Image (cartoon, rainbow, N blue to C red; front, side, top):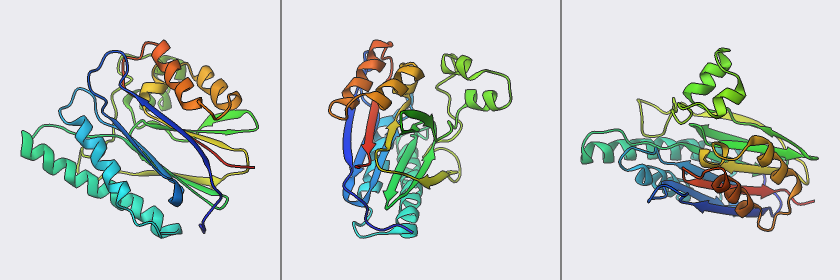
Length: 242
């Protein structure tokens, strides 16, 4: 299905935030593969930085010449490999919990695939209309789907950072997938919940739809910091050329 696509425009930024001492987020751009990944180490757990960096290292190790189904499988394999490495490290340290979200976007020809575990998000912008493509693997999102909370209530809920899936936690990572087609001019935003948790969704949509690519990642990070910035924040914006 996939062949080598166009040269995409990329802007990315990461910030430790205004409260924490350590940035447990990690990211990687494999532009030649049309592959981008954001990972968010679990805050409050020892080794969150190790966990996210292990995911990025596994993505970095994917060969440069993979295509189509082989590339998608390689991303899945990277998630699984990182899962086992994180668990081994946790056991070697103290047997405690260590984990990270992981979200990868693949763009080839006119198709996209997103693979993810946890609550890092993928947004898509076309002709000024923005929507969230991924769904959070989180406790509050489960409550939204069950009708116990509205989406607005979930965004500010005190348990909003409790995730139900993570790389490094549990037996086998349950990887979600969404796929579709992209068009010239489309934009994709990959982000950790340090953005979605502290910048109003309407403001995220406005920046993604209306701001120029130059400096767009820093504008989004600033929005999260202006909203309180109590978490690490990482963003990658990918634009399909006309």
